[in-house]
Length: 268
Image (cartoon, rainbow, N blue to C red):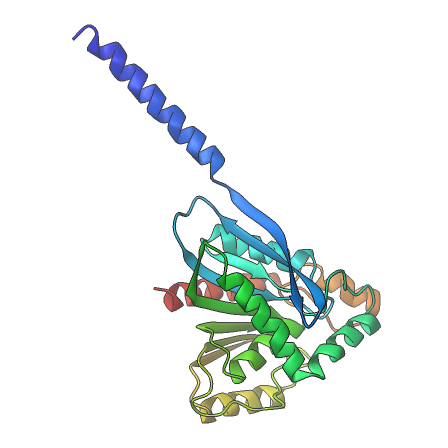
């Protein structure tokens, strides 16, 4: 008994030390991934938490019209901390990040004017995410902000194999409206009711389109919220360039909370 007690203390201390070491080793992992589409290089950003063992659902994130920058990378890291493998893709090409609205519009129009090219860029990023060893390839959702919101909605309309898509302050108009049976993804839209870029008629037309195509969808219209309401930098950018952009902390928090619930339900 006299020898056993010190041993028990040593075993307990050793176990505690091992637990601390394992916790220290398990952390958020991030890295850039370059990939090719039609001979052009694109750079995405992968984030996951290696404290989670085995595979987990993947989430694609599509950037605002400015381009792939720190904002979508932060969102990728937020998703990784929730237990997902997140890949912030690139729709413009490596190092194409706009410093002025005119340049952002140029980048955006180059993508939106060629639907097949846009789809190729999105689906290649989807393939990159699915190929990651920590990702359950059949469990994939996509989130999009501003321009990215329109992208994920159009990918859902085009029948891309996704479990769900979420649009935040994205354009809702469709060049090719959803048809019954085509949309595989559940659709969630978070919109600013005061966003002049998405007028009330566009919202009404979108909801009619979703109902006609029998899509599993929900739309939340935040009273008083303007374009860019999820991005803390939106208000300053709006002032700088005289654009109707404004951050709304309440709408941001609520839409993120609802997104978390949506993803949990989607992959339950």
